[in-house]
Image (tube, rainbow, N blue to C red; front, side):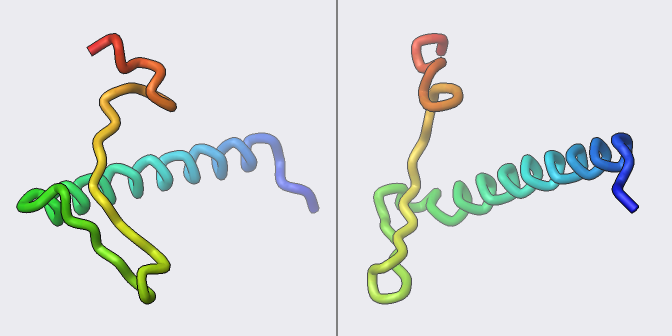
Length: 68
């Protein structure tokens, strides 16, 4: 039995809310973790994975950087 159009839209809306929510939570966590030293780079797995704090003042892909 295939899901109805309404069920697919509800699933899509739920996924959208979860992804945007996770994005906002990780931004807050990163800002708090790197607030003391924004130039610090965290490395994991023998420098295979790096985390570095960076700001993007523009919109998607920096398209709105001249608007602020």
